[in-house]
Image 1 (cartoon, helix red, strand yellow):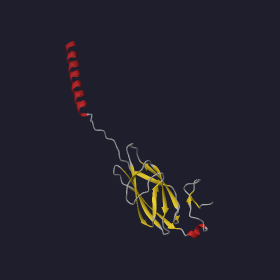
Image 2 (cartoon, rainbow, N blue to C red):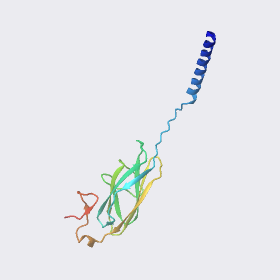
Image 3 (cartoon, rainbow, N blue to C red):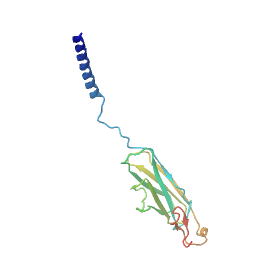
Image 4 (spheres, rainbow, N blue to C red):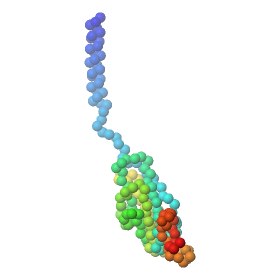
Length: 170
């Protein structure tokens, strides 16, 4: 009976080695499946809807991706449909129509300064470096007559509450 147990143990050991060899060759892959591209939304804080020539309105944004990949980069571009003005990243460059600019952070601010007294309309596009569907929003500002502010100088961005416009001298 001892020889039968030794033969059974030998057969079991050999079968175990064969199964382990087959499993080690087929169960692993060198390819990692890392998701890099995540859909994202953008939150825009409330902003003024009227603007006069020479006046600046601040727009605040926060990009909210559905996942997190450390090497995701975001770019911004804009196109002005109506009116005249300039759009610039706060502490950054003035944006040029349809030129992409790299964003340094997922939260950022833009200043739009009207250079005419007519109504303004422009679109902003945000894209990531993986080709996800870009986010787009159109911004419209009605013209504000110079009489609307009581004849005072057009407003500037208030240092107390940067999201509001305060006439100079108040």
